[in-house]
Image (cartoon, rainbow, N blue to C red):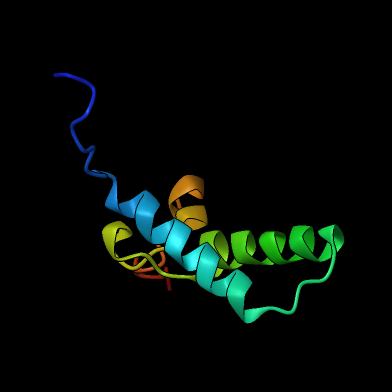
Length: 76
């Protein structure tokens, strides 16, 4: 390797997340740092607690982290 080879991104999940953040930020009217912080907090909450992820079989990262199986049969 001579240091001039192109590096191909191999982490599709990260690339997709960055695209999601960029689209969400572009949709907002952000005028100061507080709004950036607020918007990023909202994106993080939505992404981790509300948005189902295909690679997590339709669960959210928060559900997986907490060990919650939303598809398990409920007792009773």
